[in-house]
Image 1 (spheres, rainbow, N blue to C red):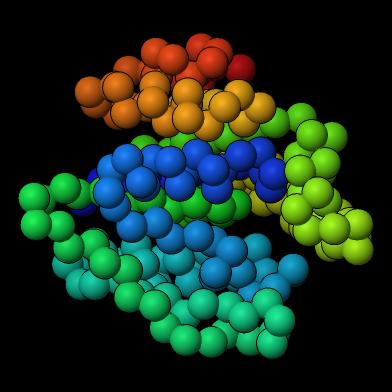
Image 2: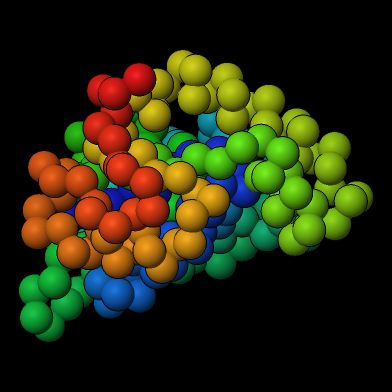
Length: 198
């Protein structure tokens, strides 16, 4: 099974792109938002991704995860990840900050980095969540910066995309590529780059 990880800072357009990819590939998607144990839980979610999803998948078992209930402040019900496919289609999409962490790199086939300007990302987030969440966003942004600095996620990405470009164009370009990550998406709105390009 090919695991596609869509990582990058909050508000960059990861969820939209990942949703388009999963829909076009007719495959399941796991959102890191369901794994974080609250606003200070970025680092704690990565081991859960490995334990609940990536390691079972690599061992030929069905992955499952406990959804974090942000309102109750605790983990809730278990969710099975349906990775069975009658036609053998072998894709799973991961989405969210941390899904491209080094700890899981051996299980990820393609790492996509989505980025956008900080002001635009915060504008999107506050538009979605409301002004009351601005302090939470700032706390989260600090965690992201530390995480990405340590992990070097952008540098390791197979594809780097501009999240201010329409997600449908990105998804269409990615899906037009015969093999990931050897070729870059031809119609992503700007030239997709290898992570080794500064």
